[in-house]
Length: 138
Picture 1 (cartoon, helix red, strand yellow):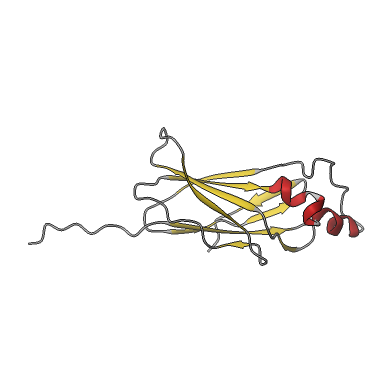
Picture 2 (cartoon, helix red, strand yellow):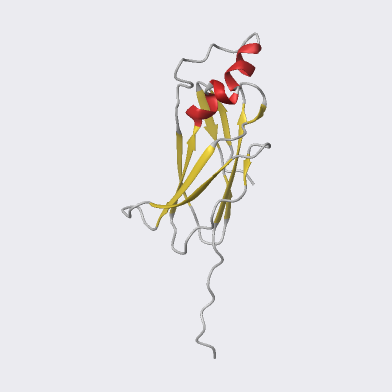
């Protein structure tokens, strides 16, 4: 009889962003990842990345053992500033609303969700200057 215990595989997180105001992936959005091991525990920053040309962020760090909650922070204000060209693309469409001077109504989007050990979580963000939606993808 073996006394060895089998460790559960680490949970992992990936995401992608679709800019629904232009119908294209949102490239260059900075994303940070934090985790905690219980409802009352402190958040621990794990790292971050940015979306690629396909709007995907595949290189977020694995979650530490014991993680129960995860937070993804999307820095959306910089994306919607003129330096990324998103405003010009949206305004070129006839039905697109004029974007506020600050860049976006939501300067950041923070998504918090519960996790189960050993599972992968893909959390897509559908984004426009005045709203967003998220869901658990596959």
